[in-house]
Amino acid sequence: MTKDSFDKFIEEIPRNIHCNTKSYLSSNMAIFFPEEFLIEMKIKTIDYHFVIFHTTPPTIKVGGIPVQFKKGSFVSIEPGVYVEVCPIDSIGKVKFTSISIKKEFFNKIASEIVDVDKIKFDNKGKAYSHQILDLINLWINEISVFGKTCPLMLESIEVSIVIQLLRDALPKKLTNGRIKLTDNDYIGKSIEYMNEYYNSNISIDEICKNIYISSCHFQRIFKKHMNQTPYNYLMEIRVNRAKEKLLEEKIPIEEIARLCGFVSATHFSAVFKRMEGISPSAFRKLI
Image 1: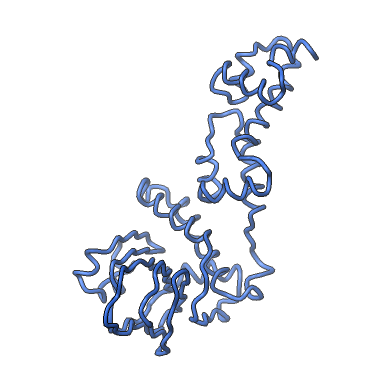
Image 2: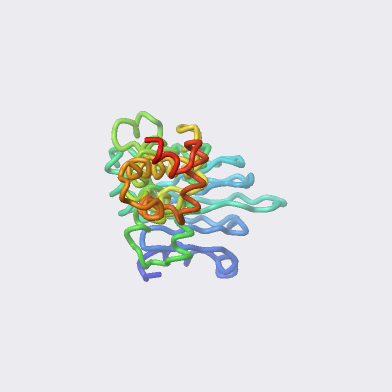
């Protein structure tokens, strides 16, 4: 972590609490998974701050106004706002996610979607979407597995996180009409990728990494909109390309299997027969 990233925010957290907190940091973003709240500590946010509550927290003062958030909600806090967790006699299991995003980076992305001067969160607590959890997991996986060796991939996920947070936090009238990433956008990008790289040994996870979406969410929306799994759709593309090549008698079936991305001629024959009802050699004779 560079000196100018999130040092000031972390320095305000007692050392014993921060040592027990899972932390993931990049130059633009920091995500924490604390095990306890900072009771009666007034902290001023320097950057944009978002807290996702997986359990019901104590009453929290945001900008001096006490708010009781619920499990399944999240709070959005602009830079310069004071936050304080009110005292409570006893508290059960704590589970929440804290996200800090550098002000300059957040405003740069936000300016493509909404007038930055109009960003004002109501701090009443809103329901967070499953998309933001998927993106957080994708970002953490990138940090954990690859570190900062691929900054373009890391920043692409961070851009998606900022956009999704804005969608979840702001009224739709402020975020509609500019950039809009929908389920159909992701599905369209995945289909483009499949059509371009069907002849290589691509996987669903690889497709997801290239379109910046979690595998779990992608497979869910793809099946919902396309009425089949991404894997079956990829097999359809390969079989259709194979049918074109079977018209050329000089190309051996083993070679067609390789050219169309199948792991072997046996795999090709099994998939082809399952989808077309006949073997590749029988199809070639038929036509």
